[in-house]
Length: 116
Image (spheres, rainbow, N blue to C red):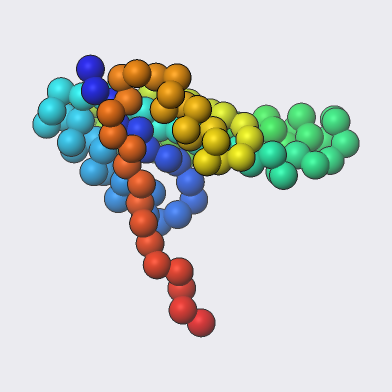
């Protein structure tokens, strides 16, 4: 099965990428993997504090994922899978693509920065 990989972040464009991936997967018999990468600089604190922050980040990711997953299940009949990695985003995305031979399409939302 060919999977569409979508990167979960806090951008508005992420929603469009999720919709596109779910619709394409539903129409082509594919699957959707949602990848979230936790940057390493979020945990430059004492060990105890870093562990709490890491767990809070994972909880936020799971909550965000569940919103998209419910929509995909209800509207497109797709059961997405969630992958969470820690580290620098680009190497982690590349590593994830290399680790899963079923990933055939990387879907990214692109936006323009706000003009001030």
